[in-house]
Amino acid sequence: MRIFLDVGGHYGETLDVALDPRWGFEKIYSFEPAKSCRHILRGFRDSRAHIVSAGLSNSTGQATLFGTGLLGASVYADKRELGDGHVRAETIALVRATDWLLTNTSADDEIYLKLNCEGSECDVLEDLLDSGVINRLQSIYVDFDVRKIPSQAHRHAIVEDRLRHHRQSFVTPESLTSHGGHAAVREWLSLVSPQSPSSAATVRYRLGLHRPPYIWATHAARAALPRPVYALAARRFGAHARQQAGADRG
Image (cartoon, rainbow, N blue to C red):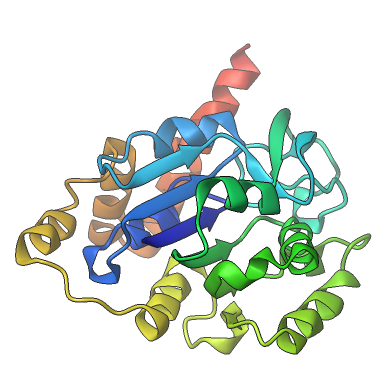
């Protein structure tokens, strides 16, 4: 079975790419610990998409997610993008990566892993390397956000060296021409996992019938509005802006 693991689901930026039938994924798991983000993710209309209400890590338990709902939310409080610490926090569930893979996949599966989880990528990769379960992965896309966390930044070079020593197939945004975001994920998949989908599936995807209303409206606005106007609208009316306004009223 061809499986895609989207670790750091946020509002479905990568999930939307993975659902493109050209890749041939039969199951797609999006790991998202923030409740506000899962509300949007569950609006995707595709039976292959499964939303996991937890973050992947090196152990199973609970943690505090700082900046919950934000694109840069992290379990590490000293992440630079979180500013002076005056951000919303949420208690979230974590699950050990090795345990989840052993329970939910088999050695015969063809698994692609995307990691954009704001510092937790080193926790996940070290756990999979230590257990040997990383051998189940066909290819990995990893954004080393750990570099933005003073207390953890030293782990970047260590983990990347371990991946190379293990001869594990992986890419980073810096190794691609797109240099990050959903465009980089699409570029990575076009290099490692091209397929030939049916015409009906392709038409449905191109029409965006699988997308939640919020995501569909976001794509339409991005295509129709000048970039400065779209950026202003996103800041004022985007999902996180509405969430923050609700918290302030509360």
